[in-house]
Image (cartoon, rainbow, N blue to C red; front, side, top):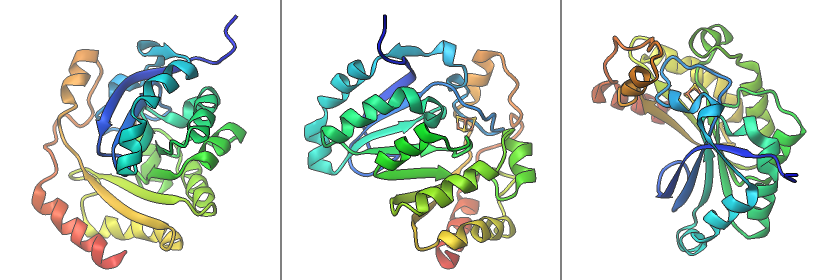
Length: 243
Ligand code: SF4
């Protein structure tokens, strides 16, 4: 009988340099409780379409990159999908990482209510990347299908733990691409201003559109173009000046 809970993984990205500091080993977990209208990874939604691993198998894969992590200040990034959906299954791996001196980052929507397993996985992480997808519950529900309150709870929780925190927002043309909207985001984030190291805007792009076609699912934003560079630059300037 298996003495572990299988971890469902969509894909890996070794020697990555995004989603954290230094050289990363990215693990994209399967399954997500949200259905963001702008999602460019709808192929991660269905956990059954992913592959199962044991914590030992994963640790063996990751350990080989230790020299790169040490030389660059890097580590593992759990992304997705939603990594905290599989917190219980991931905890043994997270413990092995900590014991092996390998730090990890959690890239999360924060949309799941915190339970003991999720708190423990967050506690052992060095770095949290949290999405603030929309600044009001009404918009959050409309565009993601989830609720804003667990996100705010997760933000308050990690801020109280003095971790490195980055917050991210995807900027989508016609939905949240104005400075008026940015003010709303900053209102939500302002109590945590001192705790947030970086607030990043991610431009909406169309590179994931083909996945909707391949999966035969409706793409609610198929009529949109990618965010223009001018708009992105203007909003980034606004954030730098006001946050
Ligand atoms: S949280 Fe991420 S993976 Fe899940 S639907 Fe939203 S954008 Fe897609």
